[in-house]
Amino acid sequence: MAATTEISSEWTAIAKLLRPQGRRGELLAEPLTDLPDFFAGLTTNTRVLTLASTDTPPPGASTVTLESHFFPTGKNAGRIVLKLSGCDSISAAEALAGQQLLLPNSALPALDPDTFFVRDLLGCTLYDSGLAIGTIVDLEFATAPDGRTRLPDAAPLLAVQLLTSPDADPVLVPFIRTWLETVDLPTRRIVMHLPPGLLDSK
Image (tube, rainbow, N blue to C red; front, side, top):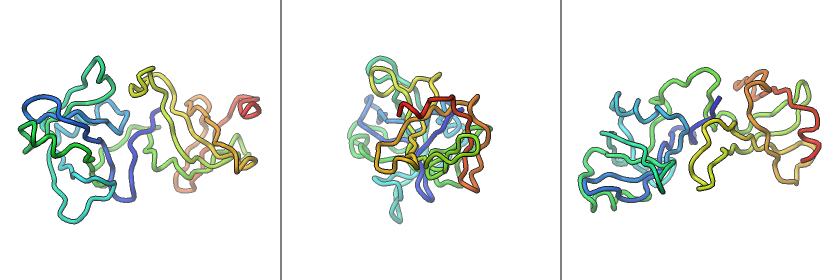
């Protein structure tokens, strides 16, 4: 079960462009999704991507398509190299550094069962069995020592602002399938069965 992709009200930011990576306009980017096949689907289906510096593009924002991509190793592990249409030189890639690639929410590919967008989980009330314990305010992913590479077998962590401690820091609750009972997004309600004592030490 993986939560993925940070989204605004109408647009999804799928990657942040960092700097040129190659001589033919390739760009090193920070992916904003933990779904490994997401970018392959964009290439195959030729979805139009919008460039913008914020999560909401201005009218007339530039658009591109993803021609190819690969996941580098070594010091850039956990990032992605993208080749975008119309970006064919180092100088063209430099001009795009700092931009985000956005998709309209209506163009997002369907998610597998038990997979959710981060936006859909934020603001939900977390219940431990029948007891409301707090509100989900963020979601974190465990990473390798480099601070970037997500650990594929590690559960995402729900950052929960406890109702009993509204002024304290949120507590982190592993979003583990075996603990999960229901996710009811229309009612903003997530029910889990947490191990005894998990919250006592927080």
